[in-house]
Image 1 (cartoon, helix red, strand yellow):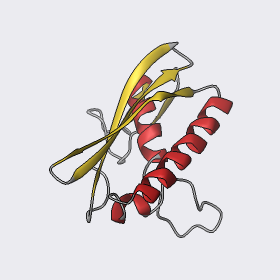
Image 2: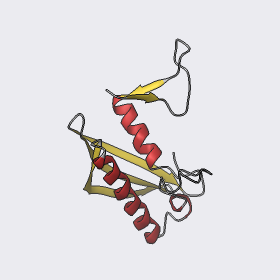
Image 3: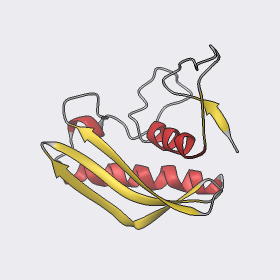
Amino acid sequence: MARSLKIPLGVDASGGAAMVESDDLNTQLIMTALSDCDNENAFQQELGLGPEMIFDLSDPGARAKILRRVYQIFDNFEAQHRFRLLRETIRWETEDGDLSLHFTYHDLESDELKPFAKTFSEGSTGVT
């Protein structure tokens, strides 16, 4: 089973680096891939969804860009034999001015279907 450092970085009860694995690691990987990934590294641009997810949530064109990027991200995950996006399960929900993207993905390692949701808050950092 794969393990990784927990994001945000922290320490565990014994004073060592906090680690994640299994479902928590999967959620962390997908959330990181679906973040705005704003950085100044010239070699790591265009990794996430971009700033459209923060400022243009009500724009259908921005939603289309977000979905196109989600498809690209999951195509990469599938090429790595990690996850397969079940595109027919994608849906948008709006509540109290926040927009949520919901979908189900197939964890190829455990051969299980997993639900996923990400909430975007307009005018904030984009993720809640």
